[in-house]
Image (cartoon, rainbow, N blue to C red; front, side, top):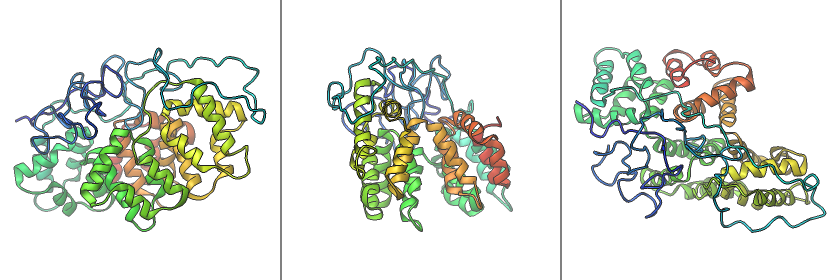
Length: 453
C-alpha cells in the first residue's frame, strides 16, 4: 500500500529560481501562510492528502517534477536553509546578482558621496563584475529511498520495539536511509496503524542522545527548529549561539513557519520570548532576525554595496564608540548576496576583515551575535563546520549542537560542510564524530554525515 501523496516529486525548484514564482515557497501573494495548498496544509489534516508533504502548488516546495534530491541538470539548493546556489540562475558574488535585473529598492540611490576621512578604493578603478558561481547541484547526503512506504516502514519500527529489548540496528537502518519528507509521515502512519504515538513509544524504548537524535529526525525542519529555540530560551541559561545559528541561516519563509509553530505549540510569540530572555543590542539583533523580513533578491548593486561598507566603517572603526544600530540595520535587512559584496568592499576599503572590526568594536553577546551572523552569511558551510568543531572540542560534547547541525544540514549542504571541516581542521568530519561519540548514537550520526573524506 502506498501512502497518499508520497513521495512528492522534485526538490529543489527547477525553474523560476528561488523563491518559486507560482504558488511556490515562500508564497508570492496572500501573505503567510500560503493560502492555496500551502504549508501548513489547509485541508486534509496531517499529513496532507494530496501533493505530498508539505502540499504545494506548481513550482512550490517541494516542486512537482524531478525527484528529491534534485538530479536535474542545473538543479541546486536554495540559498540559506536550504543553503546553496539558486537553481538555474547565473550568480554573482557567490550566489549573487542575476544579470538584467533592476537594483533592489529601499537602498539610498547613487554612488557613495566622497568622504575625505574614508580610505580610498584604489585609484578609481571600476569594480570588476562578479563572475557567476558554479552550480554544483544537490549538496546534501541523505536522499529519497526508492519506493519507501511509511506504512511498511512503521511495521519495521514497531517490530523493532515490540517484545523484550529493542532492535536499534533496525531503527538506524530505516531512519538513516530515508529523507526527512519520507520520515515525517511515519508519525501519522504509526498512529493510523497501531493507534499509538510513535514519539511516546520511541521515548519509552530509547535513552540518551540516541533517543534525542531519533526524535529530531522524525520532525519537520521548522518544527524541530521551533523546539530548539524553545530549549535555547527556557533552559538553564540562554543558548545564545543556538538562537543566532537558526535565525541567521533560515529563509524568510522558514522563519515565518517557525514563528507560527512556536506560537501554536508554546502559547506565546517567539519575539516575546526573546525579549523576555535577552537585553540590549543583542536583544535588538535577535528581534530583527526573527522578523523573517530579509531582502531575498539575488541582484547586487555594487554602488550600494560600497555605500553600505562605508556606513559600517563610519559606524565602527572611524568613530569614537560604536553605532551598533547601524550594523544591526544592514546585517539584518540586506540580502545575503548583497552582504557578501559589502564584506568584500569593506575589506578593500578599510584593509581589515569585517569580523576583526566587529571584535575590536564590540564585546559580549552582541559581539558574538554579529560575528556569527557575518560568518553564516559569508560562508555557510564554513560556519557550520566551525559549529560542529566547537561542539566536539574540549572536555565533553555539546550534543544538542551536534545533533541539530547534523540533522538540519544533512539534506542541505553536508557535502560542503565536510569539505570545509577537512580543510579547516585537517581531518574528516566522519573521523571527528567517530572519535567523539559511541554506540548507536554514533552509528546514526555517521549516517547523516554520509561518508569519510
